[in-house]
Image (cartoon, rainbow over all chains, first blue to last red; front, side):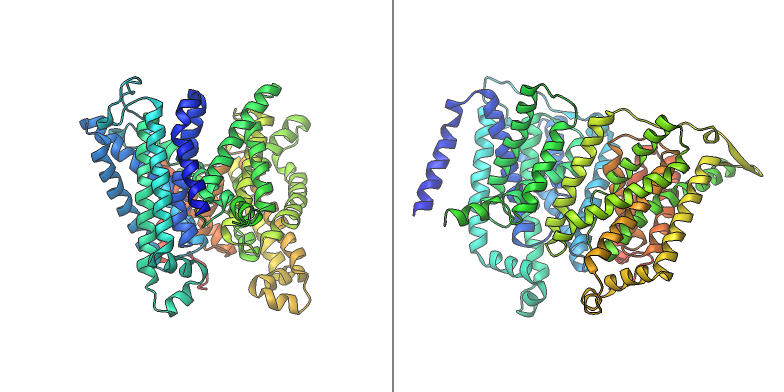
Length: 319
Length: 289
């Protein structure tokens, strides 16, 4: 009961946030929630079902480009684009999953296969002139003062609420998934696939389900990305560093936990911003120095808190 | 498109591919023994390339002379990295190892960016502009020498693993971790030695590669991916496979650059990677596990 109360209070505070903070803090909060949501989506596949995907940027990119292209070329708003994005991403995820799981590819090899698909797609999009090629695709910039929900155009607070709703929805979905038959089967597969198979679990089917849910969720974050930033470049959206960015949050926060992706997104985004501010205050603005600090902190966390921050905190707080 | 042009491009691709192969050999040896995928491999390669440009600029050392000091430094560095950072992680899950090496890679790329800035650097020696003429075919001298250095280093490593007692001990660790410990091998020390040897491959490849391309910090992640592609195609853990994979990728990149577009060249590498993963996941020369 206590947990439910504190969760509700937290959610209420987040709803009220736009009234108390400026536009910069709101953009940081939006970014945090974006990473929390996307990390949660990745966590379904890796944290729950144990399938390490290092190419999740491919779903963000395909999702973003699908909805973006419909809007850019035909003026069709994201509510239709969303379905196309999810359809394409689930199809791609199932193709990758089918090929990998049917041919018995797992572990490092599966991870490298997902990288290969993402990189292949990145270079392919670089040569697709219909979608802007390397020069990028630009959506018509939003009217900042009026809200046009049909086309998902509006002030920053609208995007904040949209991603807040997505994050809360993903949290609830993952909570339910973990308590469902699928959740228990996934965890069995994650811990020991052979044993799970011996118990009669059709591991292929349940792994495919994890990939489908994860890719559909990630497609939505791609649509959000496209309409929030209004520009898409293959070099940026499909790049392996984007895939790494997506998975850092859940790994730092605590893989396979519900709060891990959220906590990880908060920690990493604030850390990254804090380092930028701190270095600017000190006058050390050398390119690269921020990422060096960032890398050192990552190294420290992964060395000293191997299971992530959330398991450590929840143990200390006896949750 | 004349036959001569294609032949020239293929030969250049084979020679560059041998240097790629040596780089990938380092990754393959480390994975084959330590069972950790070095996600900072390409970043180490760029460090070696920068080290060569610095030695060249400061002391006018020829890149092939630079191989000795750079390789020695890389051996020590690789040994220390395995002993200090990676050894505590060998029993941890894969995503944990991955994160560790990604963090190391981030630090490496951005340290290079801090020190050298984003602009490309290179070395300039006389023989870069010269070439051998064999009939109507031209072979760049620098490319031939680089490939030669790569082959010599690879043969040295093969011989070490085949004939030396330490090399045999390392192979024993790779074959049977438990058995190696039972017969009294100091496995963690041998792991560190292996990482050091893999780093030497990277160092030699880096010194040779700097004659062929300009180096920027952004090249690191590209080489990491390239090394993955090569070892998967050739067979992760197979030494001959790494060289074969390097040559295949070198040639396919060169041909794709000639016939399609230079920017599309790595699409073929990744396409090849996907096909190999699906139909021969152990790689062309890998053993079935």
